Image (cartoon, rainbow, N blue to C red; front, side):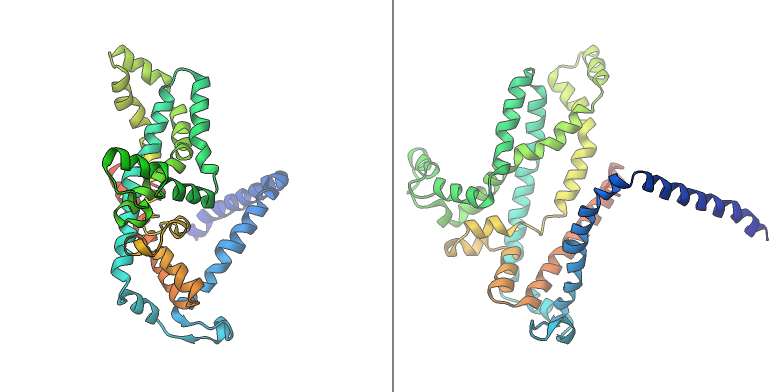
Length: 318
């Protein structure tokens, strides 16, 4: 009886809270209505297609449909793990992703720090505009430009011929240049856009911290080390956790547009393999199984990175 009496006010409070919440929602219904297209988009294109994941455990046939296809369990996963290309695909994916992470992740941070130190606002805006521009270039156009730059008569190849004694061969035809070309072009395209998050974090730093550091005799370098970086460290950690969750998901668009048969041994990754098997060879179940494996590994990496970050820095996604 005591429990019922004690819980009655709590229930009443809960009802009042829900009533107030719905009243607030109704009051701002036009604002919430603007959210509707976003919700519809995610439901139709992100949640509804998840039903199709079950074909990874089927011998799917478009003629029979999902409900009429035969269940095969983990057969496609076993074929992938035991396949000839598994080791190569996994190795290439990890090499490319870790190279992009190690060399590409710090660049937007450094760029944001450099822009933040500019005293001229006009020059700062010019620098930001120039560095943002490559992000808005179409991937197809970007890859076409890269192909021209590294062709036998391209200016990058000719530069290497003049100063490094290179033989003049198309750089995309040489396997050892694949990762540098991918990573450097990735940095060029995304560094400016990626710096926006860190520039926003820099604007939130209390100026009194810099004043206190100056009083203590700190120069510009010491201010960056002891004030700026610690202040934006939570943002850096969050972005790093999210990036770790994409280690197995290197985008296939750029790779497909740049690689060729001559460098397939080093450029073929899991996402391009899924593209070939799924769309070109129409092995829908097998490609879905490989894609699901990719997603599961990325999810596990995010959870692990988030847990480690929460224990060591008390900063996490959840």
